[in-house]
Image (tube, rainbow, N blue to C red; front, top):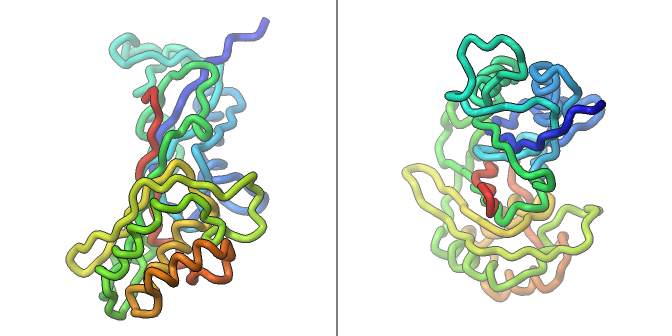
Length: 265
């Protein structure tokens, strides 16, 4: 007789520098592989996660969700005696501590949430938010976490063009070539640059993102910051639907997935 399976969401954060992105792949370390290995070890059964999306090599996440199924019933901390030894008596809080002992310094498990059997980390996500960080003076503590850019930028011009993005829904011009998607439609709800001391942060939120989309948008908007792109030029790029018309993709280390929202979390 098979034990009934329970579906859980797991919330994590990770520094992507040492990983070839979220998704499992042969002969390359991935965040998914490390997480699945830790879950399988602690739960004592094979576990495979499915993530809310995929991040590329070197990209970070301050919030990322995945779902998985297992036969273990994990309860709240207060309902489980601290002295309970059997894995089936693990609380979700103790599971988090056990997983964090196995995932290494670059992956942090934040919480585990029981969800309904049809809950889906990818397809149920209502919105996703990203940030891109760049700084202007060499700083060893920002290595691989922000892009060092040494030249002045017109942030007002970059923000004027960023405001145009929510008015469009086809972003094929910013998508990586040969991507296996049914369409290139995205609903962008906000896009703006924020000025901090010695650094800039680009914020963008949408219902979905295409591969390489944010890094290509940042590179294109920076053309405006250098005085090489105006509103008419950006509109032409968007309407061309051609990746070759848009700007260069910026380095991966400055990009962070920062928020994923669901109706039931």
